[in-house]
Amino acid sequence: MTKTQTHTLAAPGADVVYDVRGPLPPAAGLPPLLMIGQPMTAEGFTALAGHFTDRTVVTYDPRGLGRSVRRDGRSDHTPQQQAADLHLLIEELGAGPVDLFASSGGAVTALELVAAHPGDVRTLVAHEPPINAALPDAVGADRARAAFHEAYQARGFGAGMAAFIAMTSWTGEFTDAYFAQPAPDPAAYGMPADDDGKRDDPLLSKSSWAVTDYRPDVAALTAAPTRIVIAVGEESAQLYTGRAALGVAALLGQEATVFPSHHGGFLGGQFGYAGKPEEFAAKLREVLDAA
Image 1: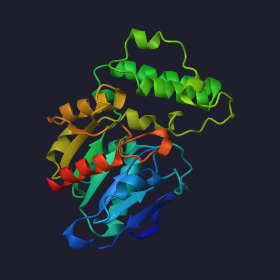
Image 2: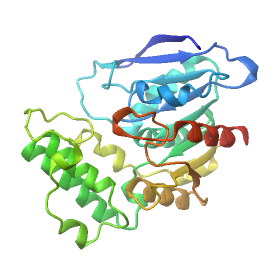
Image 3: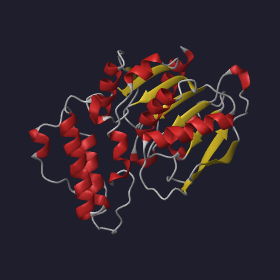
Image 4: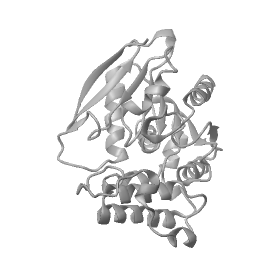
C-alpha cells in the first residue's frame, strides 16, 4: 500500500492541507497527478487514487473546507482564490508541470488555474464543470440554482438538498415543466425534514455561486500549452453538469471525452454515489497516457 503523507501549505489567509501518496520527486519520470474537487475534499478521491499506485498522487482540501482552515475572514469560495492556492501548492511540490484530474467545482478551479498559470499543468482532465454560462438555458439554470438556495434558506438543509438533487437529476433544459413541479420531499431523497438552523453549507448557500457564475477565458485556455480534456459521464450527458461540460467543450472547440458512469463516477460509494471507480480510473489512465 502506498504511504500517504499529510502536509500543510501556509497560503495567504489559509492553512491548506494536502496529502501526497508516493515519492517526491515522482518516480518513473511522470509528473505528480493532482486530484481536486469543490466542495469535495481529499477524501472523495480515495477510491480513484487507489488505482494509481504507480504514480505520485496529490489531493487537498480547498481553503475553508475539510481540514483547511481560513484566516482571511471570508466565507466565499471563488475559482480565482482556489487557483491561486493550487499554484502555490504546485510550486511547493517542486515537480511541475503536473497532471490534473478535476471534478465538478474543482474543474472550474482548474480552468482558472490554466488560464492564470499556463505553465503549471501538462494535462488537465476537467470532469463536468458546472458553469451556467456554458448552457443554452443559462437563465433557467440560474433560476433553478436560486430555487434550491431559497428552499435551503426557508426550510433548512434537507429541503435545500432535495431541491438541489432535483435540479441536478433533471434531464434536458430547465423548461417551464421543471419549475411547475411541486417542491420535492426531502424524505424521498433520504434527507432530514428537520431544520438544524444552519445556513452555511458551501453547496446550498451563496458562498459558492462564484463557481457556477464563472466564465472561462477561452482565449487564454486555447493559447495555453496545457492539453485540456473536457470529460462528461456517459450517464449524465443530458443532466445539468454533463450539459455544462458539453457546453464548455464547445467553447474550446472540442468534443467532450466520454467517461464511464456519471458525475460521481469515480467515487467508491462515498456520499451516496454508486460509481464505477475501476472503469473510471482505466479511462482516466488512457486519457493521461495519450499525452
